[in-house]
Length: 212
Image (cartoon, rainbow, N blue to C red; front, side, top):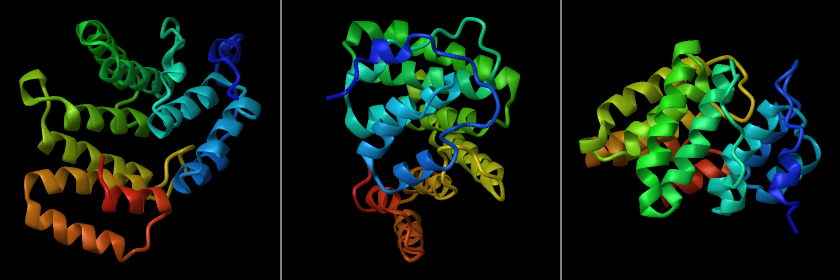
């Protein structure tokens, strides 16, 4: 049984030093090991950044809205990464909640993400969350698949040769493909075959076989 989310978030600490989930979260997520990510969240994630990184992965892996019940406040947060992750959690809540909450939670997510970009427009999680927002939003509300693709390509450049906690380099490739296939089905099919030939980690192979 999961520990109640409110109890886990009591005393949420600001980020200090290296992330305690730097290697493990990436491994568990790439393996599609939900239990591993949950265990990491309950027992190892001690900083605010660690907890946000785990929550960012746990909701889409479980679709359990308890992980969105007590989103940490953005007030006083100065880290671009943490702001981007908080924005992502509000986007999850906007997309999974009742329709009347969408005009409230959606703009809040956008405002927080804007703050993240003001802090650091090259932060990998800010790029990932912005790309996802552009990809999924209807065009009438600012969605733009072409701009999403450009943002994911920027993410790929940022991930090249540097370790980012919870982000496998192949993730950028997947999101670029997601955008390409919506722009041009033939190019998307060819890119999909090339990516599958690289024997991607389990969760990314699942994306390629059965995209969300």
